[in-house]
Image 1 (cartoon, rainbow, N blue to C red):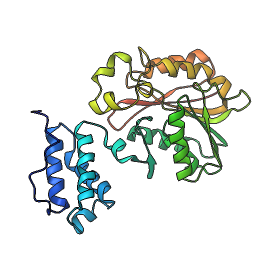
Image 2 (image 1 turned 90 degrees about the vertical axis):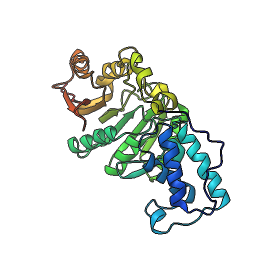
Image 3 (image 1 turned 60 degrees about the vertical axis):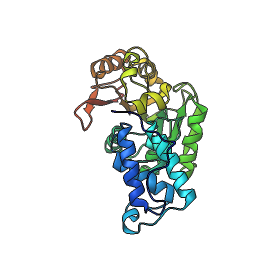
Image 4 (image 1 turned 180 degrees about the vertical axis):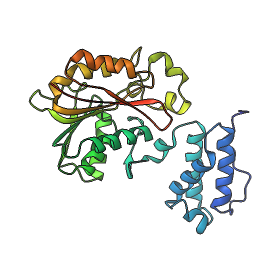
Length: 297
């Protein structure tokens, strides 16, 4: 990877250079720091620093004001430390909508978009949806937007995460139908409040695999939202055992799981004696990533 670049040095560029030249400088610096996709990140950081669209950076390039250069340098420095771009920008796109994110929540992934899409394809008119471990609220808010007839209960054990979820529900104008609840898994949900659809993207990284995660994930995202105990199934196991209390007959449960968890999750569902066949679906990389089951009794 080479030596870590010195971020305290003023770039060896004329201060009158336009945004394109500063982006080229940032791209080289990010590349030297081992950042994947340095050009894309340099463009995104510049667009944020200037409050412009990325295409406009090339269509209407201009020189940077001193305050803009300072802001740009600070953001580049953070990315060189391998802080995730989504935390730096405070935004991430999920299912066609922009969501606010902070280091208090897991960064929404494309795999979770697939989970949402699969849920929408399997259940057309849910009256009540439960999102367990809501984090940023991306699943709960998206389902509320896509299924305007549904009431969504969004539960998380971390109050800081729930503040982010609340802000996203407000941003997308679904606060009247998304109820934010603090609790350990679904303990905050009463037995008389059964859902037609339960969705959960719970921590599923096995503890021994944590140190092998990408730097951006391991060092910056909340460990409590990543690690699922020794085998990665600590919270998933508890939730599945509680499903007969939470899910309506003929209701659907949708889980995001680790790639090695397919058989174990199927066994956990069988132990409840409340579900039929468990459907394990792969992600775009061909890895087991989602599990679906319908309550049969």
